[in-house]
Image (cartoon, rainbow, N blue to C red; front, side, top):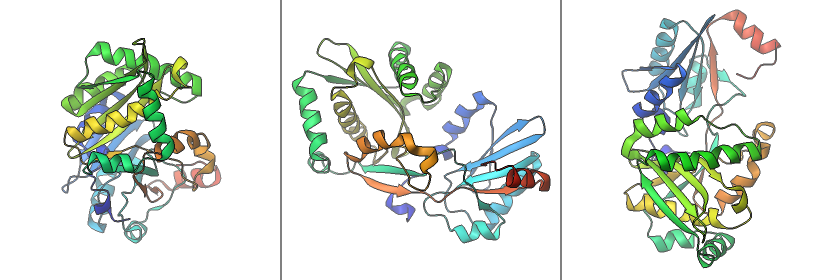
Length: 304
């Protein structure tokens, strides 16, 4: 797919994202054309990754390889953008990987549409659920650069949801750090029930004209009601009003990776009810700089 259709400079290529990763030990190196390479050291060398860059040329790939080697990287993995010429990656010696770190398929909502058109793009069940949540007196509050008390309330629900649904969650420090670094490009939407109990929340990060859904959670008592539909609907309206043009829902199920993404079916179905355009990214490519490491991964059946 042509990247012009999604109009995205990916969040993971922003300087704010690179700064956020420093807390995990990543060092960001930038090419002459502005491509971020993230490098992390380990006892035997380093690992380098390039996530969702623009369409890389052969010259840029040579520069990426040179910089990775300067930091003693054992390998570099590239998660291509939607418009990447894969033949160029092959020419540079990159081979297909079954490992990925960012979503390989996502949904992108066009926020430049009038509100009536956004509503028309919703499924019947999404519209019904939003209206039902309103009838039940659920309401949404939206915060740009949210305060610590709002973040803490959201984080408690986020962690509890991860435990209940058995998926990994980030730390409180991660949420704090991203909010601090992104500043007014960090956004939090919280939905409350009629008794004003917090029922759920969604955390977003913006970059340029676009915005990405990052983390979310739903209180145990609210998992069977429709507040989550109202939460996403009001979120996209607020983000539209802030001037963002695209909302990336950051990941849906991809049949190319059924073993990895089996649990993604439920929330993918939820996101698809809001319309949008599906964007499928090429499978990641990897280049090994150490022959022994290449053999280890080949015969050891590692996925990297």
